[in-house]
Length: 228
Image (tube, rainbow, N blue to C red; front, side, top):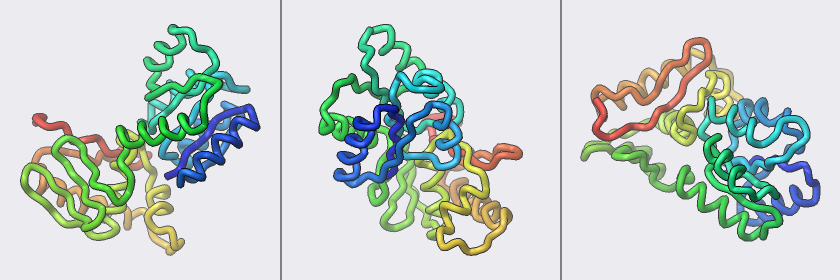
């Protein structure tokens, strides 16, 4: 899983990256707040370790903007421990806090805890209320029923599912699904999405899980038990 570290203190950023890589994560580091939103849109990470005080845009405003288009887990890192900062950060959509100075081992533990809570990893069963994705058999189960997907269909659903609310362009989905750089068109993605929607409709009649966003792409909204 990929962790984006946004930290302008070079030594601290390197220390965090080293510990996260030793724990099995891939990492990327940004030191200026102005570069964060474009990078998150271009390549959505699995979690953001976001410092509060940054050159360029500050962590709180970044967190607020990211929450307008993505639910990627965000852990705020701050040396300002005043309660008002904590409350404001949570209202902006942060998932957790780490206060400086922090133990790198504690930081890794907090990252793992947030990911377990909010975003299951590949190879595990994914649960969203009554909806379950079985990554080992490419099956989806809900309400005592199940359907089987093709490999591409499962990869599409898995990608959208892991970032609920995030809008993926067709080109981004093509890059993520067809990593061998084969040439495919927008219509290929649209065709797979159409078939995937049909199968999801059979499993959960009346529920629209994959939404088209005109001129932008597709996003996934989690199934809510008891909704019509």
